[in-house]
Length: 326
Picture: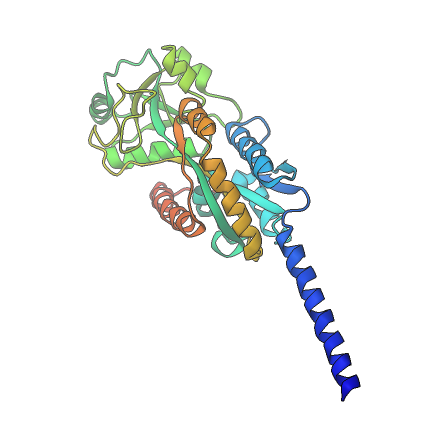
């Protein structure tokens, strides 16, 4: 009996030791570099934002955080790569309005499922969208524009970043809510801002990072902005709600996600690190001034609900505009 008990005692000790080793291994996350897939080209605004997040996460997690750019197909290439990655907490995804709320509704064939293949970690930030005009356009305000569009259809044109782009769909949304029919000019491979400043195109609907400098120097006009309140950078510019378009609410946003099946322990660590990012006052001030937006942290549950609601809004716009890219 004594021999048996000794053997049992050794087995228990060995089992406890292995359990402690396993717990220690789990507690060590992260212990190697983390890769964040971004479905954007290097040097673009969303890519810059993603690199800011990576730099902050690197400080908070104590390991290298590397950006892996995988642009193309309206975000589908990057999304698919993240969905197929090993769910171990070392491959993450930066999602955005264009790649998660809009892209799934533009294509009939998909190699991933937004709801099933990803788990939200945290929303990062939200950027206001504006109605940006050439200074040469003879329009006083949004109501004046709507009146002239109704009286003279086709009088003005609207530049977009291409069919199905955020700027295009924001314009379609405006057309539906204002009961007008803007004429869209797609700029699929070139930037429309120089033409907008020169008066070769009249308007553009877009998030404001690229336009903020031109607006402040008078090279562009900002007629209205999304949001419940006026933005402190443009206190004289009304919100769309103020001019009567209560339901017009396109916003640019970005957030962090992980492949489905990522261990809860890793998600907890990532969530805490993202909360520190969102609590960074210096970064918050830079977002407000540079991107005309704000940092908005969230729980995974809040972020999931946010994506679902935002996706539903864009789905209605895309369906009404009858747009499919495949």
